[in-house]
Length: 252
Image 1 (cartoon, rainbow, N blue to C red):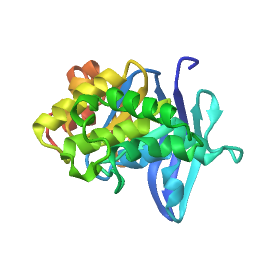
Image 2: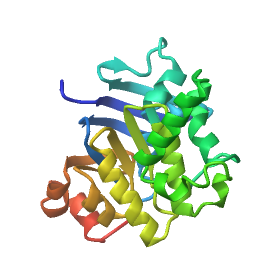
Image 3: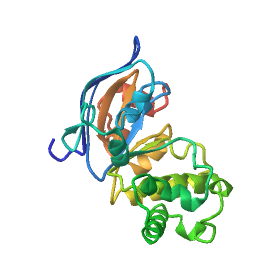
Image 4: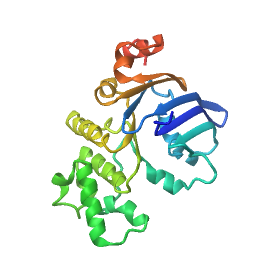
């Protein structure tokens, strides 16, 4: 599909002798939120990590098939891993700000990529924190430790840190599962806003969250992609009985 941001074809992933993903085919549309749902251990986080080659860090991983990012194979030997992870960034389940100030957390990526101009860094930090809907809450504590913020604020610092390097795709692995309901609501509002500028793929165990914020939902089971469709159809007229059984709570 020419309008796909990411195109995955016949993706198989093995951890040594164990097959974690089995023949995944999926097209991810630009500036859409795609939710990955399914029971624990079904392969959704493994699939998410394959999209910026985070699985490469695990010993014994072997991958077959292709993942194209705007038509280019991310598993090509010519791919620059630093450049790939700059384009395809990840937010993890638990907030993981660095042991440094809010400012230095957000400026970290641009500095690593060579930005030294203080005025430019100031602009990047403010723009990124505004993009993460956090600027008004932390503008007076930029030079204090990010670890002094609430869990929800820490997660938004991590999102701002990601935005600072101007990615194309945001991968989110259960970004609100460790947060209270109020912080979860703020993260969901932020994700909906970020869709205007980024392609977002989110793993969530919370089916209500998937229904609230995603455009497309993909249901994984036992390392296979059972079905992928518009979120409204997945939740009202699933095409596979296994999807309906999961959504209605018969298993999982």
